[in-house]
Image (spheres, rainbow, N blue to C red):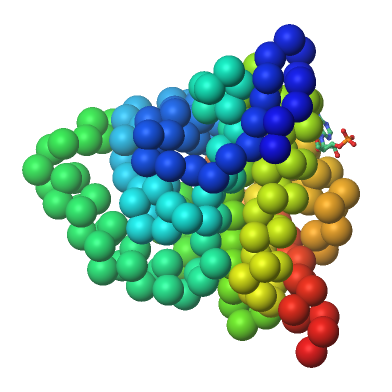
Length: 227
Ligand SMILES: CC(C)(COP(=O)(O)OP(=O)(O)OC[C@H]1O[C@@H](n2cnc3c(N)ncnc32)[C@H](O)[C@@H]1OP(=O)(O)O)[C@@H](O)C(=O)NCCC(=O)NCCS
């Protein structure tokens, strides 16, 4: 799929391994509600290894990139079976991250320590909305480089992935976001995603000076609606 945005030729195509660095850069540059991760973590490699290496290294066939003149400017990282992903993360990704942590490969400063504490408290207090994975087994992450937002990349990445899931007869897809991701929530609602659940977030205490709400959205796909 190709179109013109500004004076550049934009295109959407399947992810391939040569895109890994570009995808990782955008993932880290947008990890704080569209801004760089360094506001809450000193070393972006922890975040990328823990949260993104799964998609690029274990399930690359369900990710997509947007390019402008052959440079990656946006991506959608997809997963068709979240339970299976969780097993692989527990077996392969987490041990690697832990090993690197112990060996001193990452720079762990006070920001990362606070972040991990808030994550631990959030999990213990069940503050991330629950999603029924029988109904919504697939999920996704989407991010567009700040300079390239508003050109129709996000909506095209979403549509191509939803078509792929429909082709694969996946019954439903979900995603996690927050009340701070205003453009993203608009995009999901415009495409027909429904809010599944919301919960107050403690992840941004000390960083954002107003309440933030965690949100889970879901969409049933045609194969589900047929049954
Ligand atoms: C959310 C995001 C992926 C959208 O990508 P995009 O390429 O800018 O979006 P598009 O140009 O395709 O716009 C599609 C729709 O998104 C919504 N949208 C986009 N920008 C918006 C803005 N600034 N304010 C409100 N809604 C907006 C609109 O519904 C828009 O449809 P419309 O043009 O018919 O009004 C992008 O803004 C982004 O990466 N944001 C920061 C990171 C992020 O929040 N990622 C999601 C994490 S859950």
